[in-house]
Length: 328
Image (cartoon, rainbow, N blue to C red; front, side, top):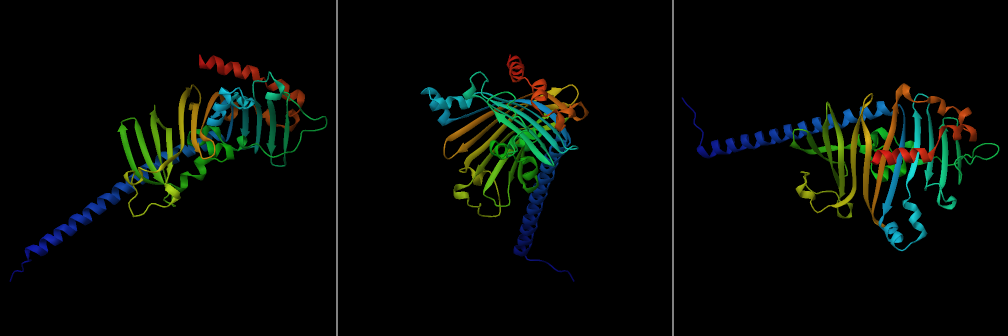
């Protein structure tokens, strides 16, 4: 005795199977994107942690916002704010110590230039500030609030935003573990775009990785948030659903091959929308990277942190000249 199934039931059954298959396929795709996205980000984070364990670097920094540009046109003293800022940072995780030498302004006009020297270590902080290259007090350097710059690991700056840097946060650590990769595109064989969101579902970003020989490194990221920071409704998070969201942050990174250390950041451009001042832009340029055992850790000893020791190891004008030559 045979059993037959009505045609309508067979169609309904087939439709259900097809629907389940599509859902499973979508689940596999999303899972694959999550795995591949996580792999790219985790690889870069691990690379950054390793390089940041002990490093030193020179940096030229320029910051511009809309109000400063207006003031420049009107010959306002605030124009001094867009003078290049230059610093060197030396850091050792093994010694739990960082050292920073920083100059804002060109150093030619005292009231338009400012210096800061920091040695940060577990037992306390030594900081000297003033209008001279090594303006140390007679007895010992002042103990003051730590400069946020020294908290940022610059080997990972391609993952930073201007806001993160100003608050001294390592965004590659605080952000990477909380991301959900909801889409992934490959514009070409050497580039991958990751689309990511957070648990709150009120912001998303696009992170672009590009191939540099054997490495995939982040070259660009943009972040957007929803109107009123309201979470996206519905289960499916897509770029199409967020096309009206507002731009808030952007970071672009250039990489240069070092013959010993591999690819390291050479220029990073940051842009953000500040509700008070308008669009704020900043550029970081890097030279003289040193990693691991090539770092001069004598600079991190307290005995070297005095006026004479500092004047022997810094030359802000020489550092500026290095960047001028590099530009050419």
